[in-house]
Amino acid sequence: MTLTLQTIRDHSRCASVWKTLTKAIGSDLTTELSIGDVVISNGINDALWCLQCLEPRVRIAAIMPTVKRASVHTDDKRVHDCIADIDKWLAGDDTVDLKAVALAAEAARAALAAARAAQAEKAVARAARAVARAAQAAWKARAAEAAARAVARAAAGEAWGAAGTAARAASWAAARKLQRDDLLAMFPPMILKVKQP
Image (cartoon, rainbow, N blue to C red):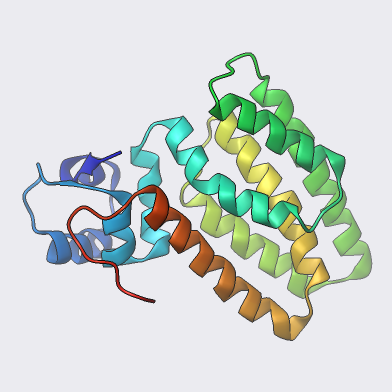
């Protein structure tokens, strides 16, 4: 799956992102590149943002490994059912009711949020919001994306609650590296060479 600099430019309003990318890739708007090239030149946040330039099933498939890793920290059946439905949709099943999936995932997220509030775990809430903000860079308002985002929030919320304060920072860095590796595996760089973080 490739995109062009023109496609990225058409979606971008951020001059610093554009400057960093064209410095690494060049400024020919017809240049084809992959999300992996963006990971290398600009980093994970900009690469996640650039996923919006791709068709919905591809961008959801790109974030599902992260969602599934987060989901191992919850036993909430709604989260796992939502993931199964999104997987069916990714496999081409257009009969999946994505709005219902999103609503179920939001209900699970809300239940976890209430539990966190009752326990007064502000650090957990901040971490969950940080996960959601990073994820929102790539996920827009379409139903499948809303469902994936809600599932990720629900699962990540419980994951952060299970982690100790000292372990959360290390866990966050490890999760970001895994997400970087996922994107590089799914979208091998076409122009730039992989650098170790």
